[in-house]
Length: 307
Ligand SMILES: [Zn+2]
Image 1 (cartoon, rainbow, N blue to C red):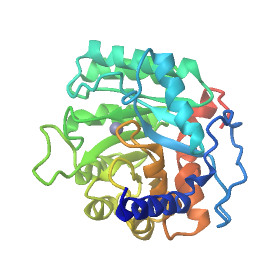
Image 2: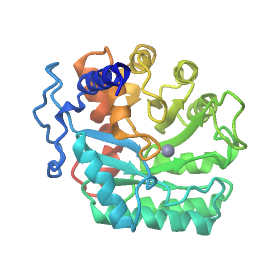
Image 3: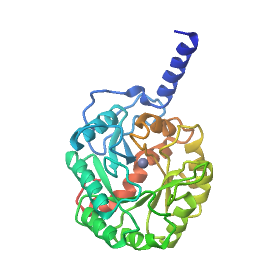
Image 4: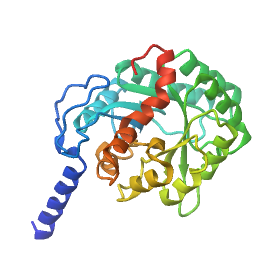
C-alpha cells in the first residue's frame, strides 16, 4: 500500500461526493414517479431522480428480466428513476429487418419487466425504409415505445432518413442519432454532429437528440448550435470537467440531456458530469430529467402513461 494509492482513494472519494453519489442507498426501493428524494448535496438540487436518455443491455447478463433488474439495481443506487433503453443484447451495425425486429422484441420484453421505469426507443435501419416504417408503427404507434434510435447503418444526413424523420414528426417522438467524431476517422455509415444538424434542418418540426454530442464535444456543441431542434446528449465519454458548462453556454440548458450509455459507461461517471458542473441548480434539473420528460411527454400522454 503506498501513499500514492491512499491519496488516489481520497481523491476518488472527494470526486464521488462532488458528484452527489455519496447518497448511494444500495437497497433503496424504486422511487415513485416524479418524486424527488432529499439529497445531501447542499447545493439546493437535492438528489433529483434522473431520467437517463441512453442505456443498453450490455455489461449486464442473463435473461432480459435479469438484465433489467441489474440495470435498475444500479440505477437505484445513484438516483436514476427512469431509463431509455434501446438495441438488443448484441450490437448489430447493419441489422436486417429480421434482426432489428428481434432486437426490438428484446426491448419490448425489457419494458414489460418494469413499464413504469423502462422506456424504449425503436432501433431501425434506414437502408430498409419500408420495413423500418412498419417497425416504427409496430413498436411506437401500436406499442409502448417513445422514440427512435439510429446507430451507424448510414450517415443520417442521407435522404434515406427523410421518411423516418417525417413519421417521427407525425408520431411526435424524438429521434436519437449516434454521432461521433473519431480521431482516426469515422466508421462506414457513422454520423457526425453536422449530419444530425443537416437532417434536423430539413425537419424543423422533429426533435433530434445528438447522442454523445460527437464525443469530440467541443466541436460537437458548435456543430449543432444553429439547429434549434437538436438536443445535446452528454453520454459516452470520460467525465471531463467543463463539458456540461460548455453545452449550457453554447446551447442553453434547455437543449442538454443527461444520458449514461450504460453499460458502455457507468451511471455514476456520467451523472458526475452534471452534478459537478458549475451551472445553476435549475439547469441541472433540466438536464437530469425535465428536458427529456418534455421531449417524451406527447407520446407518453398519447399512450395514457404518467408523465
Ligand atoms: Zn449507446
